[in-house]
Length: 149
Image (cartoon, rainbow, N blue to C red):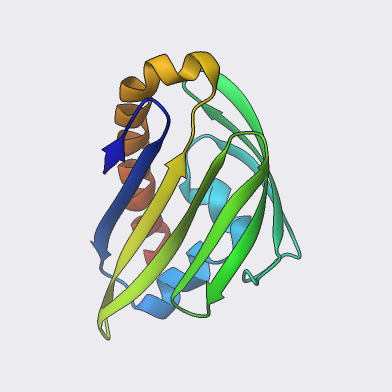
């Protein structure tokens, strides 16, 4: 995890006690994001379903007391394992999600993101980073519960 005044980079992983295919089915379908990512009010992928290169998103989320409206696009996909994305409007960010099998019954899920805060947000980068780490860790715990259900 790195951070400067110009960018915040995070990579958080957790072993999930579910098969990789089940976790992938949740994280690779943006329609599921409001179910496991706190603050995501709406996520509208086009097209719906499992991500593909070129899938676009319209996201509305609340974080740190603010509402953000972000457009995004999926930039690469390793089907069943990983994908990357970048924003096209709203915050300046890119990231990805990956699922690595540990055995037949568990996997490691990784969420990574790099955000470039704008203007006054740069002064709060250390606080934003801390808040993001807490939020993403909680999101991954919710993901594990969702994959179990």
